[in-house]
Amino acid sequence: PEETIIDGEGARRVVLCNSGEGAGTIIEGFTITGGFVFAGSDLWFVYGGGIYCYESSPTISGCTITGNSPHGYSKWFEDQEYGWYEVYYPGHGGGIYALQGAVIQSSLIYSNQSNYGGALTLFDSAADACTVENNTNNDRVSGILLRDSTAANCISWSDESGLYEGYPGSFVHCALPGPPEPAADGGGNLNLDPLFEPGGYALQRSWPGSPCACPVSTLD
Image 1: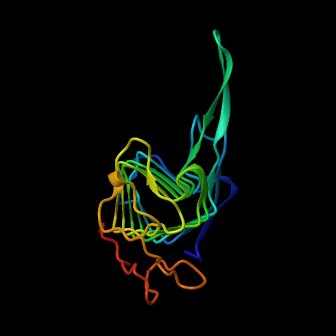
Image 2 (image 1 turned 180 degrees about the horizontal axis):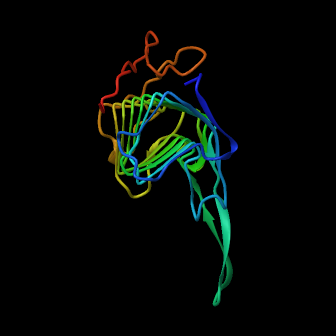
Image 3 (image 1 turned 135 degrees about the vertical axis):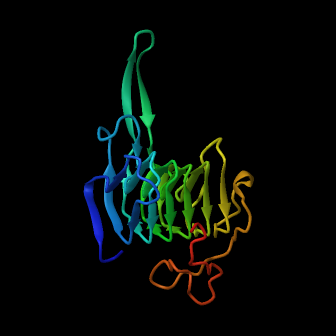
């Protein structure tokens, strides 16, 4: 990934899948960075600074997703009875926003920002064997935000991860800084420091002494 970089240059989303792409569409081995989505570039909501999958189910594998951000914005409306009022539309999925069947596996997702789901927002999608670290949020969940989705064998150690309000999801065999909310605990989760290799995030979890030795995707 460090040799093949796709850069949005802080001016655009990097990757968009919205034409019904299926599992045969594979995005593999790229660094996705510099993605930025802002008011006016999308109607109503702003989704997926790095990658946005809408009603598409590509496989994203072995990628590094970093330095991406969809920014929320406010819009004013006029009501004949009550006058002008403001509605805030938050950004979702700093690194990746995936809707309907996408699979993100064996990828490193760090230093992204959003209002909801700083690293990942997944609706009816899945993440497996991913490392998610050092992402930020303004409203809810800096790491992985799930709605009808599953995260398995993932590390989200410095980032909070959880469920989209009122919707189901499951964390299975993940390393998390604390126990997931009861409705999201699919079993086998660890509250242990993953002991990243000095100088970076050990995507393959092979650093001696790490309790997170599971480099192979279980979604294959």
